[in-house]
Length: 186
Image (tube, rainbow, N blue to C red):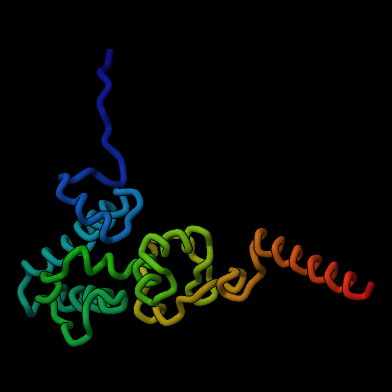
């Protein structure tokens, strides 16, 4: 009989407890948000960068792919336009990528009172980027899309229809106003 082998699959793995300190500051609700960001940084940018760094500076692959990597990082807003060299990629940290999340951007723009409030607004579909409503707090906001972050048109915060409780209070206030007018007439 064949033995069952364990197949490891998953999106994240748990790092050391020292990362627990960072979670409250950045407003990550589940811890795996931070781990996913850490892993995507480690699995996408760093291997590409380390491979390019081993090549000669005049190598056509390093020139072509290095420029592509730098353009991509500048477009996302992680790397400054004045630092468009491959050597500056090494100085990047995970926190630079976490600053580009929609949750952080909503808080920094002042649309939310706290980073946790920003997460709630996004999950409840009150935030849009351009014309598209986004309900994923980990959505990476590009530099050119940053100026288009606003409340959704259907949201009560953005001038849309009021919520159930507010409509009920307004209706009760209208009825109360009508009753007072009838008493004044008598």
